[in-house]
Length: 321
Image (cartoon, rainbow, N blue to C red; front, top):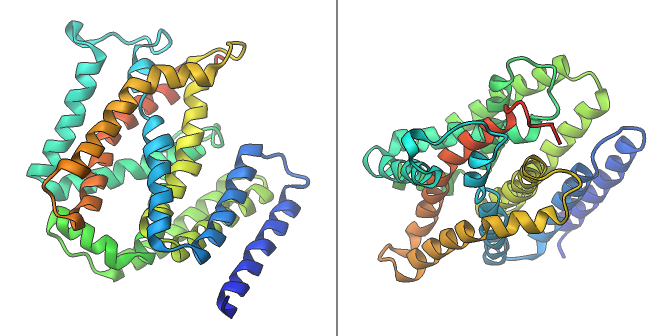
């Protein structure tokens, strides 16, 4: 083990003890603490595991919890709480599939605009999920949601510029210089810090959020592109989203809500997995293009999912349970 790895491991454990000190007199969810500690463990994991092993681990997480968290959109749309009717008698499933395939066509005919739209929508969606129950007193949180999500993406893109630039070029035929990501990261980071110091009242909450961003920055730097994205996507987005959806769909006293959620999502989850596996093993794409297609697939299912989650979070019955 070289000296740099030893120093980084010591740094990670120092962060853990600092985390315990920060949370000793501050009320924060156990889920947040677990997720943050798991992120620190993942940093250590990146120091000893190859990029291939990291990509396998993150792919398993994305294919399981990542896709599963969006597999119950139809049930959420059709729930009695949503209080919306299908258009002209057309099923929610058909409408949902039309939106998905529209996203795929968008990537095929105007990939540059489609990619930009995907990133912008994902920035908002990541910010909404992370902050939706922490900024209840803010009337117009949309700019802040986008700022936070942009900060996450820009950190990841800056640390893996070569690979990200290659993926962007394959999808859109557009070259984006590194300076664009770096300058955007600095500007977005300062906007985010200014916002939380103005809007958040508890200084320890502010420190925890900065602590999290620092841990994510280290993870993105030490891990592969797919691993960094996968850990954030699964641990910090998909699992909290699953919890929010289950709380929305099932009353607190309902028996085995997690199992019921899995059963209702199983068919759509399996269909998505079959589609991806078929593309990988029987498709005619060159191997070096699979990552680009994978992100395009995520984009296609993200567009309708973001709409559904927005409707759920803004439903008057969101907190009725």
